[in-house]
Length: 263
Image 1 (cartoon, rainbow, N blue to C red):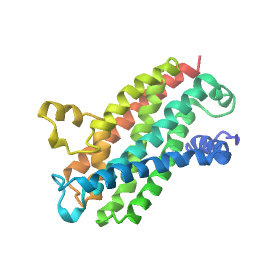
Image 2: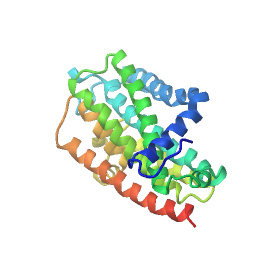
Image 3: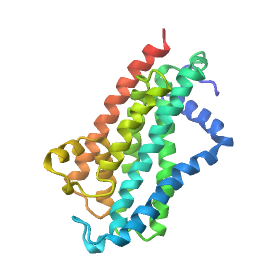
Image 4: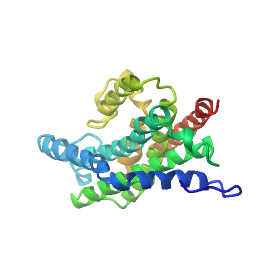
């Protein structure tokens, strides 16, 4: 790991963590291909396949595309979420509890703060790579119909920040690998019900309120609205929700990591 002399700018420590991750993934970069192609396969099977059987989507004008154009932004938001969460949950737990990687890192000038910020920054880069490739696939399929779709990239960055920070906070509560089943018990229903495959209006109002509280719902709104040419208050609400979620969970994760690593 590169040395980090005293007096370096505040970002030097997190950047050193990112350099370490790049070295680690230098020989296993092909593992990231699964994250890239999984949403593409979902899009082909559900968006294009089932989309051929679905008529007009409520809330979506005919010139905004069909069912595939409705599902694609949601899959992109999900890809950004999974890319960030996988890095700060499964991988981070292995480094924290199994490999004891951070014990060695803390013997260098790097701090717990550098570890937390560096892992979130690396998760952001990983999620961004997945997002860029998936967005390019959407463009190739002709599903980009509005110039507002350019806002998808900064939106995906914010989605990655929120879920990377959330994953970092969650993993500090995990006691063993078995606890990740509880994480999946929340993640899978959220993926299915957070308007990924159908509009919010299909639910009764009590269920809508629950769905509107889910972080993935706001992530999908942040991506879907500009992707379909709509930029209104809903985008600001979703961005504010994710920014607050990411900031609060990052602060919580930093506090708990200090307790776990500095004894």
